[in-house]
Amino acid sequence: MLEKAVAAVKADKAKALEQFNKGEGGFKDRDLQQFCFTLNDGALVAATAPTLLGKDIRTLKDPTGKGFGQENYDAAKKQGSTKSATCSPSPAKPRLSRR
Image (cartoon, rainbow, N blue to C red; front, side, top):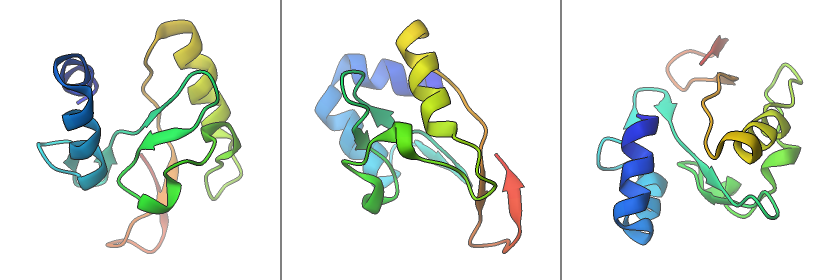
């Protein structure tokens, strides 16, 4: 999904971010989803959870306390994009699961 998301942003950034935010175009698969943030200030510009838009990714932690946001930010600064796994509750499963 990451490669598809990168290609979509390169082809049409505005359309890709809109699809990411809506979870459309194959950019949300069960509990897998992508998010985008700016490298200058870490602000989330695309996330399927609207309450996260505009938040600084570097401050985000999963329910176990893992600071996945800072890890993603640091990796993206070095590589340009990154994949991550995080724990979060699923609407279908009340317990935490590794994603």
